[in-house]
Length: 439
Image (cartoon, helix red, strand yellow):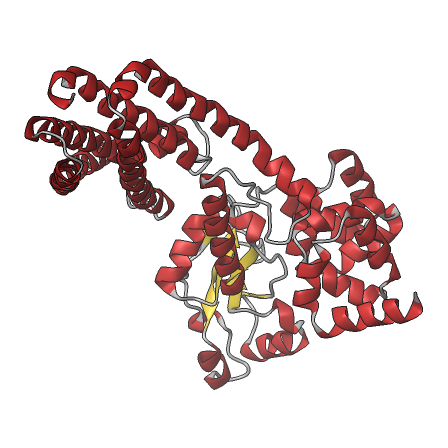
């Protein structure tokens, strides 16, 4: 076993990112065995790169003293993310075992939700007092830890953010001059409760490397770094993509099978129920289908076009919600836009579909009346289904948001249900009405 352990240690040491991805594919016992066999320095590097969920599982299996030692050496934001995933009963023991200064910082971070500026900020930040001289400011910068230096923020004695200093202005000023005259007080800041999506948007507009985070009283409590904001934005985008189709937000490409089953199976059962609902609609028109076999052939065409139309609408609306393009009062305009867009596209697709169906039935030897009747039926069903799908793609995420749920939460499953049921009902319903033409 010794050569294998040595090989694993070298792999983690030389390729920590790849090792983290491979580590998450192991089951719980294998993770625990491997983690315990690693030197603390390498284990720490691995713990920084794996997902908070996997990190919490590891921490929960360690002795509180050993786990606290590791958490204390992690960057505070990473440690806070791991603690968020730890069971509350174990979390208290871990925080108690931490040094007081570390636990105080983690507790301050733990009060923020992960999707807020406070939850994604780096609390280690160096600031300069507003009443010191240029020479004292330069001396303080030289003594500060490099990882805590972002911009040269200036604070008053009570900790409130006063402004920022340009490094060029500081170096060109006379050593004995106070820094107050060169402080730029118009500095962009974000409140600690601002949502992470708003922080990402603001950082994209300002193109800063970091944004200062202040509390309710204006005290500087941390910074959000550009790399962290970008990582948060990417993670949120992929989580929404997974949730739209009913996969778990925490699932990764190489996650264990247990997580795959736990996150996907409930929504697969929901999808199964909705599939039976669509099948029940077909069952109502079983006699109609028995008279004209061509109806069964064309059913997927109607449902498929509705599904594609709804997916297009859903994607655009989800983008609008994510980027806050939908201002108050614009939702009615959005629904009308999708309705008319769906109707116009439906008419265009319906004409082409009707021509194709008519040609097909003529080639099959049907009469002109029968071919025309079937073409008319599928054309009308196509217009109805595509218009309904466009509206559903817009309305479903808006309803989920109104109910306080994530707009992305399995929206595609609900959308597929609507398009299938409306498509089948419209197509077979029109076929029943015009049966005398079709047969």
